[in-house]
Image 1 (cartoon, rainbow, N blue to C red):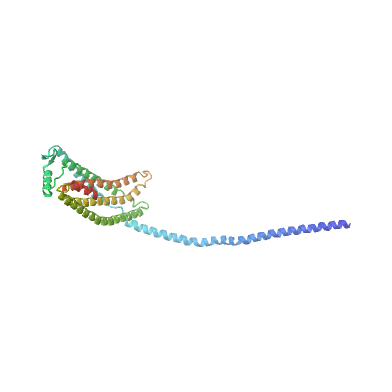
Image 2 (cartoon, one colour; image 1 turned 90 degrees about the horizontal axis):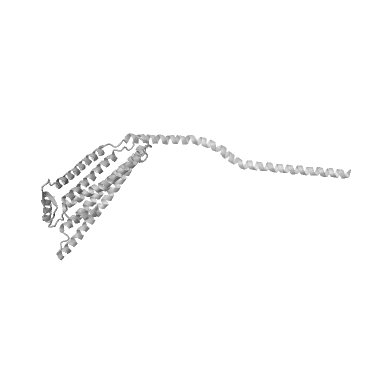
Length: 341
């Protein structure tokens, strides 16, 4: 019996220990859960508070956005009211100038044909087999008497061909410029006013740059022309001592003047090219709007705008060379023109 009692007591004792251990495990689990809840509590408070704060900020942000949009609409309306599609005045002027220069081209070709057909009175130069009109020979003789120089002979038909080519290039330049300026800038399209204003700013900035560049180059060209006068004067004086005549006194004056004339011609082509290029920018962008044509129309406008610059170089270059030779009758003066250009 005692042995049984001891076993029962041991079993009860073991049960009590197991119950205590289970209670301790439960208490530890409860404590861990409480700790986790205490750590997550602040975050939950923040998460719960953020929607309230956002709800308070949203109306203010929406009001500011509405105010900004209204101001933008007002500014855009004011801009649209004051901005219109450019007029056609410059288009008409370019067409008229193109017709005039094309007429000069045709006149030069007609003169060349009449000269070849011997319709114009001609004389035969004794030391040359080429024919030239009487007024051309008279001008050559007058220049030779005034300058004391021996003018190199250039056939009159060659000068007519050069003039015809120069006038034809200038006519193309005017017609291409009219074609570019006749394209719409897209004022009535979405964003058209903003595009037009940006292109105007670029245009004004480019012309301002050319203005200051021209002022600086003007004084630089004066210095270079003065240097040419001094250099050719020294060479002319040295050749006088040697009793040689490879340099004529007219060269001392003709070369610097031709240099300045060439520099002015080059500057004029730069102004023409920059003017049309900045005007073609917005028209090129607007021509690329239609989805059907893609970039084809924009490429045509851009190509025409770039061709204006090239035609101005060819046209002004050829016509200026002819006029410089007709005035000075000195091939060295043409070298000065090329140096300036």
